[in-house]
Image (cartoon, rainbow, N blue to C red):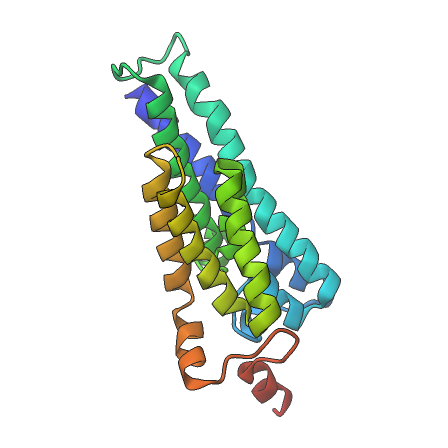
Amino acid sequence: MVFWIAGGAGLAVAYLFGSTPTGYLAGKLLRGVDIREHGSKSTGATNALRTVGKWPALLVLLVDVLKGGAAIVFARWFYPWLYTMPLVTPPPTPDLQSFASWAVCLSGLAVLLGHGRSIWLSFTGGKSAATGLGVLLALSWPVGLGAAAVFGVALAIFRLVSLSSMLAALTAIALVCGLEQPLPYRPLVIAGSIYVIVRHRANIARLLAGTEPRLGQSSPESKAASLI
């Protein structure tokens, strides 16, 4: 029982990494605004760019990537350490490495959930794309770099952050299934990528309607607010 409680605490730490509301804090500290009341209502770097400015948005992006990576780094240390604690009785398993890999993957999902559903923001948050990139880079850098490359190329061509993020998520699925990767990584990347795409459902509706703002443009919500 103690082992499972400690294991759950490790997932809670990963969730708390993700739930750090970087974009919200940037808006409050730098502009005195709640960015959830502006633009796309998201706390991610794209809405921070529209609401707070370029350099704060870059900081939000970097921190969101880092907290995804930090959750994976922490989990890779914590679960093998937990398994060797003399006062904790772990379940019998012939393969500690496989157990740790599955636990790390669950931590990856926890940090994504924390970013999208932050306990500090009444379970609102961002789209989890940047945090997901941090998870990918820490988990498997070839997959992470491949997804980042597709994001960059798509953004340069279309100047649509939402579309670029979803294409990067689909690329991550293709790469993790096509490259030689540990089995636990595949369900994590598939589930995490689907989660990121689902978080973009409002963007998908705007893309289909032709109203999704391009990078550097104000969102329809921001334009409406400026007229009030």
